[in-house]
Length: 366
Image (cartoon, rainbow, N blue to C red; front, side, top):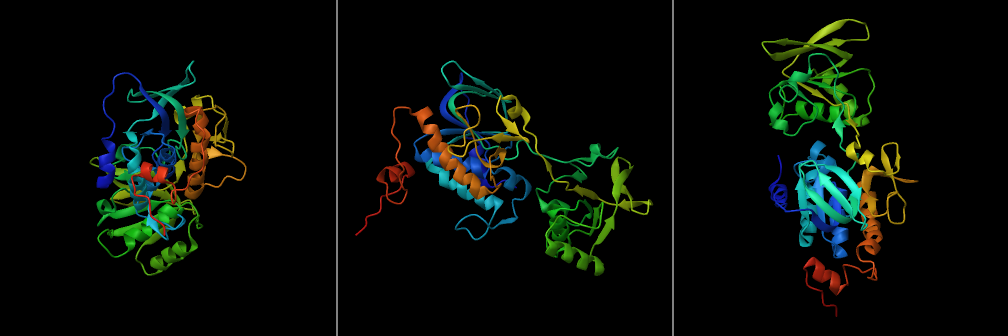
């Protein structure tokens, strides 16, 4: 479920006649995109944020809002939703405007050096800079390609779990061999309000790309007859009266068996799609945007890329790396946005100017 804080963010964009003129447009409202708002805000740059999802948070909120994250500096553990809510609280002083549920379809360089930006909802911008923080792009779950299954997507076939309570008491079949498949299988077997009636895990081989402890736990539960694991490929499905009643699984012995179910959950990972970004004339390497490591500019001056969407020598796809990139990108944009202004590094601990920007009182030191 979307938290109340996120619901408030959805309504910040209002109707506007003509293009919205701004200094910065951020494409992507995941953790890195949200922190880009903060770093720009410290330099007194207001931003407009665009995201294809209907709420902020990006991949952590969309795919695993309740799973713990352990590598955020000074935060021993938090969920994707908690991280998002904290970032939204942190950027409140900067008054960013959110345009959610729409993706950027057009980016065109203008004669005056600005960029014309258009979204799928017809929102227009004229902006001096663009910060692409689109994660892996317009990520889509890899689907199970079996004839006859598609009509059940959203009713009995799911590629992500948004509300675990929806699956409580159901006979579940889970397909996949990665962390998501194992995590949800264990989650639905465990005692609690989300416990399923039965859980059957299906993977094409008896080997997993998942945490060894979870694999061991799954095998232990199978021995205790708390769940089942079947090695095989899904090759067909059965339906009755418009309802999906089972799937056909062909094992390594070439025998096809019918596995009954109420709900089918498939976790094959994500297929990154750059979407319209691929048409913006930026240098791309393996579906990622090539940037420098001084200011994280793309091959087009004025367009920056931060987070998982970019690539450079030594790149590590970590949220904390994206946060670092945001700071340098913000400073890199200053000569474009304020060409006459000298920029000095200031510290939020001691700078009265930054305290004013943040809306906090300057501490008095004895």
